Image 1 (cartoon, rainbow, N blue to C red):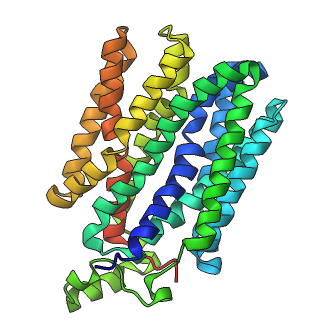
Image 2 (image 1 turned 180 degrees about the vertical axis):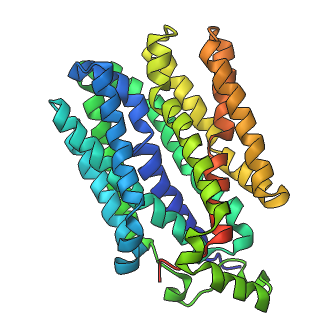
Image 3 (image 1 turned 135 degrees about the horizontal axis):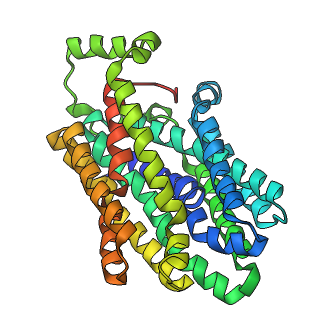
Length: 351
C-alpha cells in the first residue's frame, strides 16, 4: 500500500514547529540564565530581551497572512526559518543589550513567520475531521525542542565554560538551517500540486448546507463580527501570559529561587518538554470527541492548580510532579484553540 505524501508533509510541519517554537522561542528559556550572566544583564534588561522575541512574534503573526497570500506558504516558511537561523547567529555574537535585543527580535519575527503558515498547511493536506489530532501531533515538535534545549544547553555550558550560551545558539542555528533546506527539497503547498487529494477527504460528506456555511464564514466582515472568535482570542491571550512566563523563566526560577544547579534545572525543563510532546495529541483528540470548550476548560483547571502549587512548593520531587503535569497539558491549549478557530474559519491561504 502506497503511503500518502501528506504524511511526509506532516513530518516537515513538525520539524518547522520544532525549529520555530521549540528552538526559536522556548530554547531561550534554557539559555537565558547563562546569557544573562555572560552579558551581565540585570532582570529589567533580561525581561526586555525576552519581550523582544515575543514582540517580533506578535508583529509577524499579525502580518504573515499577507505574505502567504502573495508568495505562498512554502516560500514564507523557508524564508522565516532562514531568518531564525541568521538571527540566532546575531544573538550568539551579542556583546551589548541593543545587539542582543535586535537578534532576539528577529528570532521572534522568523518564529511567527514559520509557525502560522505551517499550521495553515494542515488544512490543505488533512480532512477537517482529523484537525484536532493532527494539530496535536504538530505541537509535539515544540516539545521536542524544549527537551533538546533542556538537556543539551546545560551540557554545552559546562563544557564550554563562559561561552557555552553562545555555542548553544550556533548549534540551534545550524539545525534550523538544515530544516529549512529539507523544506526547500520536499515541502509542497497543496496536494493538487502533485495530483493528490487531502488525507481522508473521501470520508467527508458533501453537504450543500455545510458548503453554504463555509462560504459564509469565509467573508472577512463575518469573521470580525464573530463573538465566539473574539472570545477564543481573549482566552488564548490570557493563557499566553501564563505559559510564556513559565517557559521563559522556569530554569532561572529553579536556579535562583529554589537552589537547583544548572544541570538539574535543565533536566526539569526537559522533563516538561518531554511531557508536552504527547499533550497536543491527547487534548486534540479529546476535543474532537467531547468538544473544544469542555476540553479547554479541563486543561485550564489543571494548569491553574499546577501553577499555584509550583509557586509555593520547595521539595524537588513535588516540583517535578507539578512540572510534568503542567507539561502534559501544555500544548493542549494551542491545539484546541487552533482547531476551534479552524472550525469557524476556513482559509485557503496556500493556494
